[in-house]
Amino acid sequence: MEHVIDKRLNVKVLVLAITLIIVSGVALILKDYSTTVIVFIAAALIYFFKHKHEVYTVTGSPVKRESYFFDRDSKGALENVLHGELGDNSLLIYFSDNGSGRLDVIMAKDESYAVATIYHYIPHKYELATGPIEYSGPKVKKLARYLKRCQR
Image: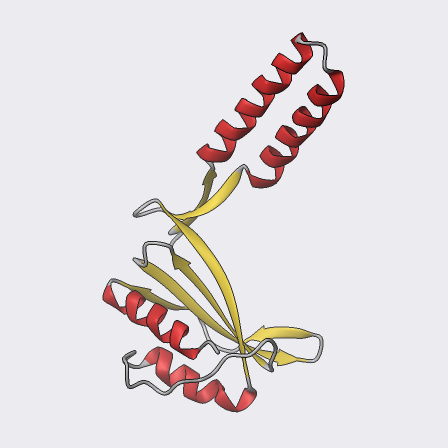
């Protein structure tokens, strides 16, 4: 990956934090100290925990990360599906809440770019089983459809 995913300032959160600070200032002017403190702390917490988000740099679309778990027996079949042609007739591998294999997917919300990585479980941690598989263009939409079909 050539740094196509970047962390950027979340403008909506910045505007919300500034608005809350202004409300806090108005409450201070009106001598409502408890409201001032509560709103100011809320603004600070919102800004410090949500001020940056990941975006796909080419389109500026936000990125979502998801993990899907599957049984160890399905690892080879899943690799074949991900490296091969994704379609409506591809082998379905049903995901569960836990498993000995994990598929991590990073996908732009506009479905223009995605990266899939398969991990296998070694006691106490997941280790990389395959390198990142990058998708762009119409294959991303096919991957998104495939992942929705595999969820129970």
